[in-house]
Amino acid sequence: MLDKNSPIPVYYQLEERLKDSIEKRELKEGDMIPSERVLSEQYRISRMTVRQAINNLVRDGYLYRIKGKGTFVASNKIEQPLQGLTSFTEDMLSRGLKPETRLLQFTVEPAQGKIIQRLKLAEGEPVNVIKRVRLADNLPMALETTFLPVKLISGLTEAHVYGSLYEYIETQLGLKIGHATQTLEATVARASETEHLQIQKGSPVLLIERSSYLANQHPLELVKSVYRGDRYKFNVHLQRP
Amino acid sequence: MLDKNSPIPVYYQLEERLKDSIEKRELKEGDMIPSERVLSEQYRISRMTVRQAINNLVRDGYLYRIKGKGTFVASNKIEQPLQGLTSFTEDMLSRGLKPETRLLQFTVEPAQGKIIQRLKLAEGEPVNVIKRVRLADNLPMALETTFLPVKLISGLTEAHVYGSLYEYIETQLGLKIGHATQTLEATVARASETEHLQIQKGSPVLLIERSSYLANQHPLELVKSVYRGDRYKFNVHLQRP
DNA sequence: GAGTGGTCTAGACCACAAT
DNA sequence: TTGTGGTCTAGACCACTCG
Image 1 (tube, protein in one colour):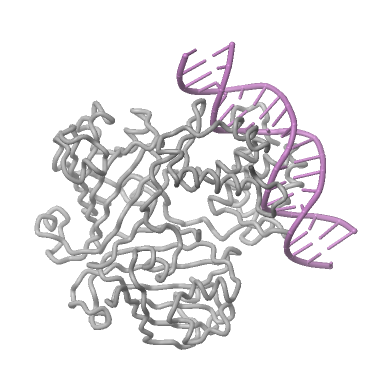
Image 2 (image 1 turned 90 degrees about the vertical axis):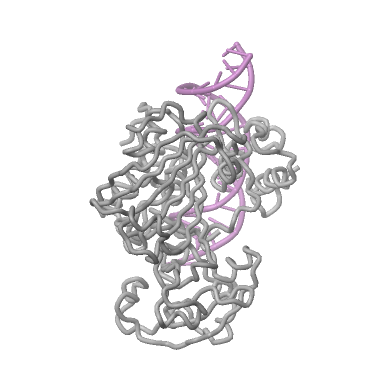
């Protein structure tokens, strides 16, 4: 049964239960799950609450609905790559690779040019500039330059930038990271990049530029990355509008 | 006022109205919109219906909520690139470019190797193979090879493949395209690709591989594309899990 | 304390699919 | 005709923010 006195919302409890059934293969790909009315009687909760749980699972790709027929289990969520906005550290861990960092630069500089626009700062406002070589399983994977407004991220020290910046921002600063827009393009390595990435000049690289925002819509960071084309593939899940 | 007798759902009418206000700048970035209770009184609809409208606008990035404070207009949706699962034709149009197609190959072949797995077919099942040069504003943009199971997409003729395949699938066949997983990687053009794309050997290209599914989870297509690195940038919106 | 979003109820009618 | 999801109502209590 569900615990209605728990501080955990009932719809969330039901969500977890259905997700469990799917992951335990009690409900298999293509199976119809009990109807909303049946679930609402079974758990003695209202149908709207059942719908809230199912809505979330549909949004997350676990279930799909067919009007007049029922709600069904979608194909395996298993072995899907990590989706969404993740840090390099999280990305590598989800790929089963060991992330490491080599720090090249850690300075505070006045904002200028594109940084002002993208981070919505006044000219000259201080910005943390962090340039790092990112390694995966001891080999260079990417060259990453991060720009963070000092007024948002205070108290940042060199020690923090060897691990996951996102973890520091979320757990230490208590800020809630919301979303990002990212562009990806193919190009070839420039001379200044070849050494850090241990590749030849002219080797293909993936250029990634990310603007991240907090949940409250404040610009959080601008990141420019150069990934080795021979080592990195970007995965994305697309939903038909 | 809203039309409660319209076949258009009330929550959707409210959605459009709020979206209009935002696009007309009656509600500006950072503005608080009327509270859910106010909207429900104003339009004489229940608060749950208001919430359904607002939920959708939050999901689509037009609004964001802060508990205990209110619901606010997010930063400009304007000039955001097309998101989600789109065809080449749709993608180019959204970028303000004129899409065209040069057909290189249009055959039916027995499925084999990776195609079998990705499209979940039996060995030897017939598959449409469509190889096209995709142009944007009269210049080659990509070389695209599409694999479609014949049993799903019947009656496909050469005439269809000069335009948007997605449009044919959705409006002519009445199939509902659902989602896709896509990988992107940087590499350099191979000899066989240079001519069609009008680039030099060794030029950077973006390799994109897409597996698309119908709303009912049936595999729909496998597409392998080679985009010119100097002309194409991929945009993606990422949400923090 | 007043206002906000978050959760939840116990119904209702509709359109659609299958029998 | 029965069962399904889609929409909608008119309330309710909670936790949170702010003055």
